Image (cartoon, rainbow, N blue to C red; front, side):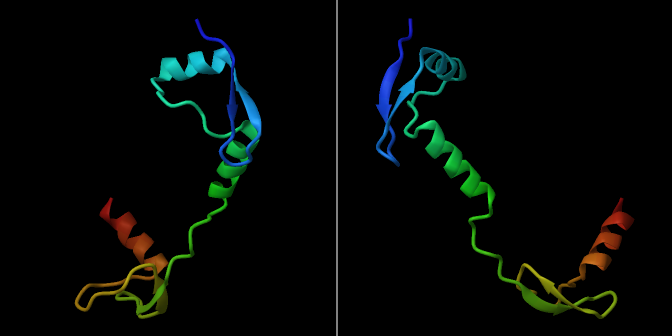
Length: 97
């Protein structure tokens, strides 16, 4: 039913074979699009995305509402809402369960 196809990688421009077995797997999973990248480029892309290619989070200074320690949090503190350091946050969380 399926036959090997030669495709061209959109990243490196090299030809690669989309095997009959791979085509059958794609069909079983309901995938409608053929792969656009060769195995090497897919692997490189996957490893780059796993390395945290996102920009580092902006951190904000705050004072812990429980112990009064200076801390950094990944969100902008809002007046009137308590902010906790990691240790106090974890203890609050454990107490809730």
